[in-house]
Length: 128
Ligand code: FES
Image (cartoon, rainbow, N blue to C red; front, side, top):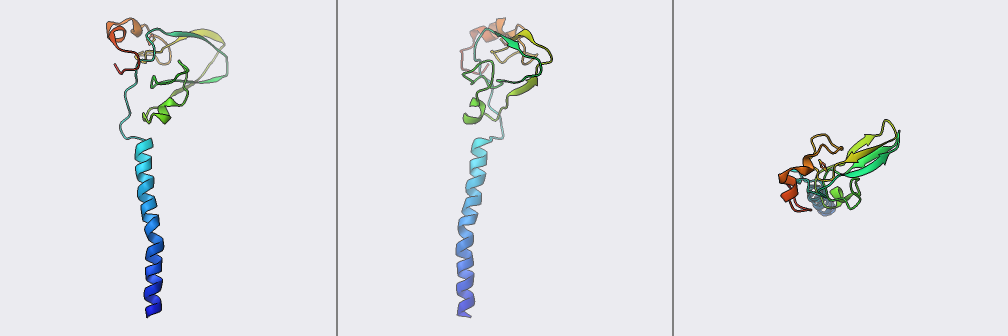
């Protein structure tokens, strides 16, 4: 019987770190993948003109935290925003004007919203 007790104690001892690991993983997931996404911030107050190449896939920055505007540099993930970039494929090679204020109603393209008082009065790096 003593052998069985020892075996059970050993099994419990081995299971304990696994329970802690599971809790660590869920807190890690909550930290890196928040349930409520952050608000996008104004990256710039004027759009950026870029040439899109037909067939190429782009990732437009949604969070406004990228240092490579108007495209994603992974900041949405590393700053744990819960947001994701807008992935799109260019249908033709052409010059386009992409939004950097993150308030456009036609993402990823500029629709002129950056000219509004709301955007122009906002601080760069702050949400609207
Ligand atoms: S830059 Fe955002 S609407 Fe023009």
